[in-house]
Each structure stands twice: as C-alpha cells, then as structure tokens.
Image (cartoon, rainbow, N blue to C red; front, top):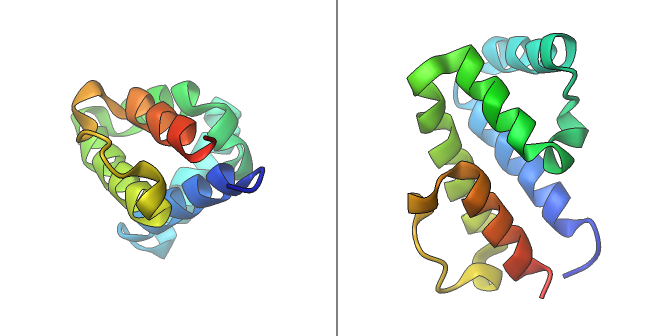
Length: 105
C-alpha cells in the first residue's frame, strides 16, 4: 500500500459518512471540529483519538452511529487489505488502528 493511502481512504470514509447527514450539517461539523477542537479534516488520521473524543462531545451516544459508518466505509475502501479483520467490537480507535496496521503490511 503506497505511503499516505490509509490517510486518504480514512478522510474519504469520514467525508462520505458525514455527508450522510447532509451537506450543511457536514460543513458545520467540520467547522466545529476545526474551531472548537483544533482538528482539521486532513489531520484527522493523525489525531484519531482526539477525533473520537470530539465526536462523542458533539453527538454524545449518537457518535457510535457515525463511527460504525466510518469504520464500515473504511473497510470497504481497504477491501482485500483487511480480510479477516473482526468486526468493530473493540471500539472505533482500535478498529481504525487495526485497519491501518493491516494496510501498511
């Protein structure tokens, strides 16, 4: 897997997942992430734990829905690189880290 491919796929998965809420809500969330939590969209792959905390502060228990959707889309994009990876039972940050590790093999 080329260097930076995981980061690109994760940002795409996040963008697509937030788009499921509508374009205006997506833009509002990205604005809030950057201005309240100091997390720019392109920096999310390097700040996944902070992103997780920010989503939980913004959405409360509803963050789980978005995190499951992001992980699902990331798995689809990574496809054969993550065959055999168990479902997201370990939580969002662990699942994303596992996908990254498998993609970088």
